[in-house]
Length: 416
Image (cartoon, rainbow, N blue to C red; front, side, top):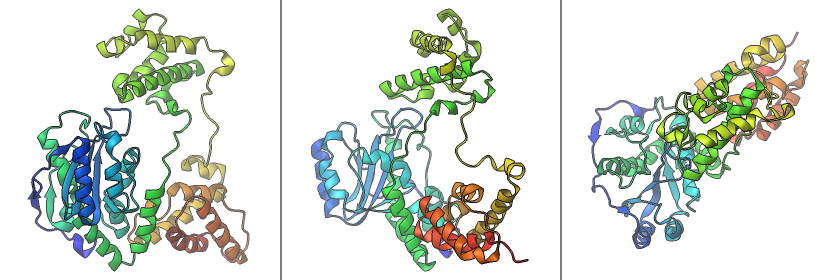
């Protein structure tokens, strides 16, 4: 724990010092806000509220901004999506300060809002070695203020937004700039500012995640099914649900829960009447789509055997770690040694091991990323191979500078 993180008596922060700003929802209001923000100084505090669990999309339903000399602004992007150009021109060249930036940047990018530079207070806190990196915890431990939380999981697509929610939203950026300076000070004192900067840039420039193939296989409860025909039913129902959810911008689980999909795959109904006897399918929201659900089941039932999905997919990457000892004892030994080395490195630098290096990358390195070096003279060759593997796996320069020597020393065969 840093000196700045020593617990203090937290003073409750119940409302923004300047009051809750009005919600801006017209092109003229956004343009005026952009002008004020452009006249401010220093970095820009940014936050966005989504409607995860309620909506299909990850779009922002409220944008909170604050800059020294300009104050705080709340913007409803829904009615002004096509009128955000003045805002983008005013703020895209600034350093943005966000907490857990990877959560909000994709939705903001959809609106044409993209930072030139980034400071992520949550990620910075991890690199600084803070034990608790939630926004409320960091504000309390570092700034001695207590944030009242509780609406982060609300349906922010609701209109009009309740006053209490708007107060909560404004508070999320009220102290973010002060928090940024405190975290940056700790990082500088610890000699970690350059490391953090590399991580911030990685998050800022990261491509949107590629949707995984066969996402339907993540349906909760699918592991209870034992026949490929049942898996086909899950796939067809999942796809139908996804299409309906996307079209209505409703979270898929609110249209049909996973448990109902698995129940239909188990029961294999042949009529609407049979379908509606299954859990959930008889409900008023699901009955309107009864024909769609039954059509999905029928498509799966009549699918040729050769087109049925396999029970399992070919495994891409290392097997589960608990199978390593049986399948490849040498790889299991390498992993144990590598994990120990990374654990020591984590303790030495007060950085969570997962932030030092992706655990999956370490597993892949130990499973099939190394030739079978037999002698102690292989250290230089091993170091080059580890460096090459980590670079190809996306490890940043600061991570490689720390991990390559530690892993090379740990994995070099012992003499004798």
